[in-house]
Image (cartoon, protein in one colour):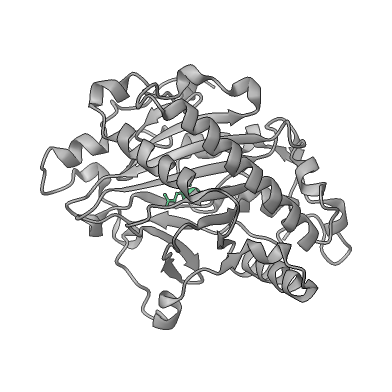
Length: 363
Ligand code: OGA
Ligand code: NI
């Protein structure tokens, strides 16, 4: 893809802009009025704005009491159907590892610019240090920098594309990715069961444990002098299967769409935020929906988050599971590979749910 060979404009690091002491953000980051964060719809329901996404204790799944296990599976099921988002606690990933992951990546973003620039990314693979998503010339940009890397499949795992500094970084990425991929595998089984499928069916549709794709995107949202005018990350749904997000423990920022409103997620200590991606919407024949989300920024604190994307093997055709296609509910989506699918977001940048909606083969 020729258009994905280079960025359409010189890359400016948002962190450098923020640290330069500007008091007004460049026009390039100013969103049109309807896309700005402070706009609440006229009929805004305050109660809804104050709710939080469901919090689920995974330890209950190991309980001796069958009723507790069942209630927990049911809460996961309704979180997937009603929110597309939930937080999990007692998920088996150690708090020490979660803390080390946040600290290490904060340290990376704190390194001098020239050290980070060695890992500057290109739109062909997105691997490395980046500051925009999409290659549309003249696009309005988001107020964030990021680091993107591949962990799975093993053939794409390339340590030389991961930061060498801080010196503990590569080992941390290995440990963190292994633990979070394992947790995603467990969640895949739970979702499969909840959909009435065989436990391994979703995982098999993704190509099986050895073949799935897993990428890490670490987001850095610098302080912003005019947070009302821009977004850290524009509204989008995640293109892949499942996302496991480790949010900043001190700074909120993630907002999830609930009807006409945006609900700001209040991170629970030591929790991960789980959300359904577009491929899961397709596989479940829209029983589960990927939900739009975005990130707001603030003028007081930087924010760091780690998103682990758990994806299908990229050259497999993804389509609604046969068992979920019935006379009353025909297949809503035509088969497509994830490689084909993600070209869209890599070209256009975050565009709400336009892509998965455009796939619909039946209405
Ligand atoms: C993402 C994302 C949310 C956050 O990286 O896709 O939605 O809180 N991140 O950083
Ligand atoms: Ni996202």
